[in-house]
Length: 264
Image (cartoon, rainbow, N blue to C red; front, side):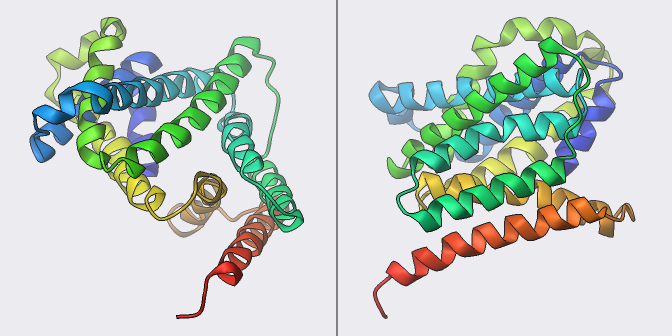
């Protein structure tokens, strides 16, 4: 996912953010269609419509996220976007321990994100839109996993999204005359969509949507760790405290889940 994000940033110099998001969707659709080759049943009835809505919502989430980070600091966008998973986790909470875990995770992400307001109202609106669509992605992704549609559903969904969002291709002009840019665009689709979202389907089959939403808090933690190991970006004390809060919250929640399981 972070490799895909880095490539997307490189493309921003040549292609507008919405165009990069459309290329990401196109790349994901092409790779998934070639890999899965979904049968006729995947293109009919309820299965098709569920996959189609999932694909459009997910692609829309990526579009508004890219538009947000083009206007606001990444940390600000991450913090605002995480409102979506937090709300999903909150609605799935049933005990005081759940609430405590949610509070720890929320505080941790806030600290890691290093929130700074940059005065862009449009950027904030894009980030909050990404938050709402991220919540939709979790709910629809869970339905996709539970119905056994998985990767075939993703292939159908991103194909539909590519067609629905085709007007955004208007901003991708330079890509079609540069094999390098086209390859980078498809690479974003593979690294930032196919691989992480396919793994999401595996996890969603095994977890409830509330637990999955909390686990998404590991994303900013992972980003901080990658920055330390690869880029030698030493986290500040605030970021370190945020990591501890996230890990503490996730541990608190997972302990409750393990306690409910019957002995083997």
